[in-house]
Length: 313
Image 1 (cartoon, helix red, strand yellow):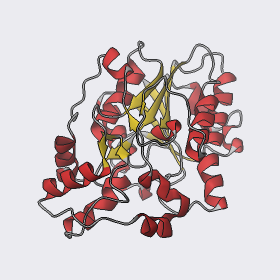
Image 2 (cartoon, helix red, strand yellow):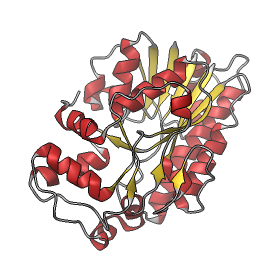
Image 3 (tube, helix red, strand yellow):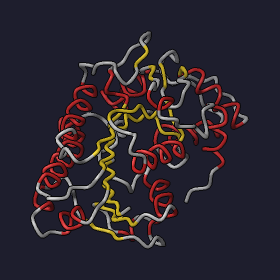
Image 4 (tube, rainbow, N blue to C red):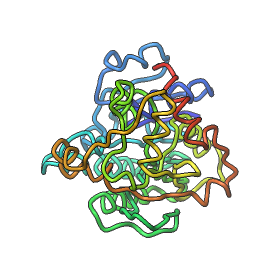
């Protein structure tokens, strides 16, 4: 397939792009950064557009993005500013929204202008869609939460749903992605390896996770298997508590995991963004089993062992 990739130069993209390339797909990667600034991408022979897809002007008729879209059989849209990287100031909240909603809205509008739109759109969302709960279990049919992340994910998915009727849409509500180079695990590894690791906050909050390799294989299946459509939860079969996650990571590294990180400390660093880590949700997928998807890393111990020993690409 000829694929247009948006937001695929981050944590997920650094494994997804090589996988798609190895599968023989022709790729056009869109990034605000030049190719030379993305170390793992410099030796891959795919097209690169240094553009911001959140800017309407970059989707103008005859422009590079519109032309790439016209030539695409499928689109993967993972664009979005990281949720829990910094304090949720007014400006950062706006960036969280714009990077997702504007990009997706412009993409869908450009697709609607085409006589032959791409056959498939795989669009990211997040398990934050469901809000937070200490007791409830959420599946694909569960309603959206009414907090900031729930509203953002709902609006994001609504924007994607405006794609042309001929385009098959798969929305992947992604959990905590396990990979050594970034995300929650990337931040925890140096602390745990130094022997100062432990659960964050109460330790009772749920963590719905997925190994990056499984997420990339899930996206690949969503692109190539016409049976896939609608919402799927991108999470491993067994969510765990933060306390279990911390103790499992400690055992994996052969380090203690007894020093909890108090919630107020995280609030001091991240403000409202701390809620992503301090509040959790138990998310499972009913649809992945129905679609016959098999996880390479369904078990947390195996997933962490793989994630902490995999060399960076």
